[in-house]
Image 1 (cartoon, rainbow, N blue to C red):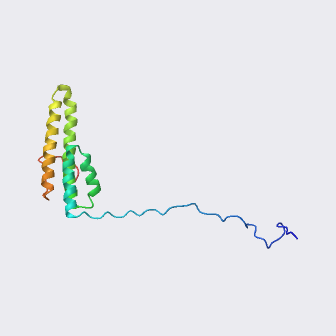
Image 2: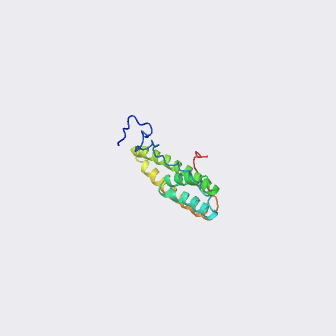
Image 3: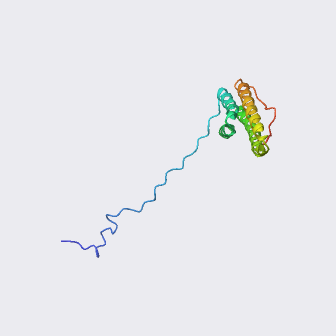
Length: 142
């Protein structure tokens, strides 16, 4: 004899159906705190911040942002290099503006040579663990 499901209370009406499920939500990743730099790594990144000035202000900016909480020396020197590179960038802009009166090219050439010389000097000092202070720079990043 077949049973009729409409009138039979002993049969589960949800039989064969899946229970409602919550949508999959991956656990939020917990960022791990970056390890502090060793003394050698601190000096290395500090010196790279200065040497990066040969190609512009981005290397010192990136090094400062990444390592400012991980190494005191790297933070200090990357800030110093960044301030100098911002100053040089301002000089480049002034030089480009003054190209209309033909002196801008000389200003940009002089700024480029000065940036290379001082960046290499900063690199050589900081790789030995000595702080380097540029002869001139706007102290915008404190």
